Length: 399
Image (cartoon, rainbow, N blue to C red; front, side):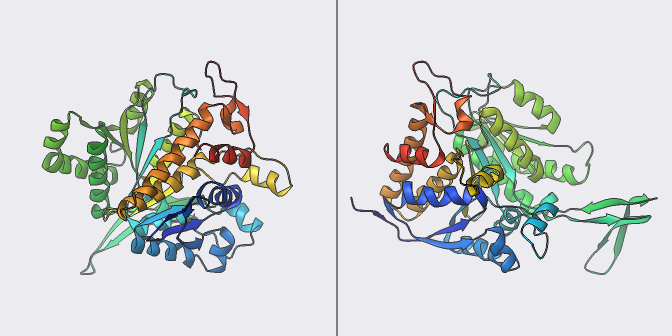
């Protein structure tokens, strides 16, 4: 069989630990036998980020701006333990945070639904899509230790005029943090959410905590409301969907009672936490798609979970693992489909769709990784646990 040819490379961002192993196997077993894969490769593994003083992360993001479509493996954001384990020069920031800041996009995360896996919240019959702002907040924050003394925010305008606000008068040791956002990025986030909701014809809910963060979160609320009234209200009414703003604790209560079928827009940190909650409630963190979309139409596809450290340590000991690769497979299929769409290669789009269908059919036929076995209930089908590589081979038989 002749392989499908690509005309423009994908930006390929390799990662860490068990997901790095899965990344290699997915390419070897599911993609390269069928596609003449063309990528511009960047190693975002923690060792290479340390070797390059994290310049490789910036380079991969700039390459994404150049080529328009990227696919990213899960990566480690180092903490104090990782500093020692990998003998790092410094505690590098989240590579996702760096890439998202450069691309200035919105992350959309949606569950991968499979017949036989019922969500932990049984009322959820339809997808809940998390739209996560991908700029600023904690991921671009400045933080540090404090001792006895006064911590302040100082803003200096272009003319040199200063405004000061006291954060806290410390009587002893503590910690302090400052974070920011921009109206431009918030407006891009809002437009991306409104446009996505119109595309999929689902209502849009946006939540912050503006009763507490009256200025910071209040600015998000005001920008969303202004754009909705000025640009989107008529379009939403025509599409038969609605937009609602409310407090995040209220939305959480509403989401739990809902049947799904909602786009839930969240600030950066909220979206990080809530997407994991939603993915887990649907069955598994490894059963969720994630794509970053920039205002200029740049796309970066990734798995929404971590590097599966526990399984990696087992793998390094020569033990068998049953790590779920579905989210990583769907990152590849999303990127391949988008590349095919942009380059007018329908065969590449069709291949991505076939691979997604084969993955779901494999699970529905009862062949799956260990995390799904206890969740799977389908009349006439007994779930069978496969190791990671055998699961990928089972998918390959159905492409």
